[in-house]
Image (cartoon, rainbow, N blue to C red; front, top):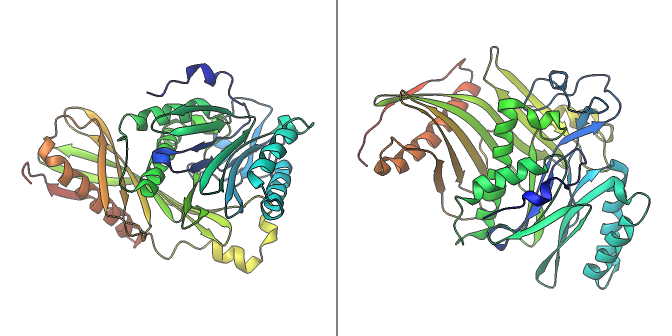
Length: 394
């Protein structure tokens, strides 16, 4: 069982959340997109999970949410890292690591030396790094200014940022439901990473506590796929509510987020159904080394268009279930990727008072109906409610 309480108080305090982990022996990186500064932005920053950052009161009055930025970098197909700290240092490290991967005959050794030497420079305390590289058919992890530990189910874990406590809490929640092995480690590793990110997003939607600590907004994921490190794309997150009443349930979406990329520009499309009127936005998130000014006006206009389809290779549907007898929470994770793996729906959480024999149908029905609800609302309907008879038999 995950127990790293002693690490949390000493975790790096840079204002972000980054982590590397190896669920089912497969490498994954997770990183948020909120950028902070000691200078207040002229215009409040629009964050996918809230209307604007002016509604968030930071825990440190000296700092402000100043923008959105990708924290995951793939400077070479066989190397990826996440960063926390000063952007200019992340840009330098990305360029240096890319060069080492091309010129070095022993990149794993030389990169370890580079990271160690960089940590001893005057800039070393201004950035944290967690990364993974592929060398001789093995994955080698490296870090700078980060905390680390090992567990059976997550493998080698490294993390940094003000979100350290929260990501450990999310990992504990997910760990309790993980099997010891998987027939499809790539898909399972991504789903585990996405589940952790979803726990963080749900907490952010409920209380915005992460934004007060200057991290969150959305989360990117990198994994090793088809012989190289890649960012997971596209991926959807949907939070919904189901109200159970006797043998019927009524459902409605609360918030929908789709992450995809226009070239190297991350686009977070969000639809907030929690209030009237419904708010739809597309937020561009620049990679390390680029600003919005790096793109033409035509490219930016194209990037800001709503997605042509709401379908996605990866879908997480977090469902809040309320009934006459208790309030329940469950998580549905689904993937029907183009990678050729089986359609996989699982339901987790406290589902007492619902017959065990009913759970598979319940999970599948929720998944189908909430995808349908999003498509219906996005097709022009002002609202969507589903009501179905709940049979107790398969």
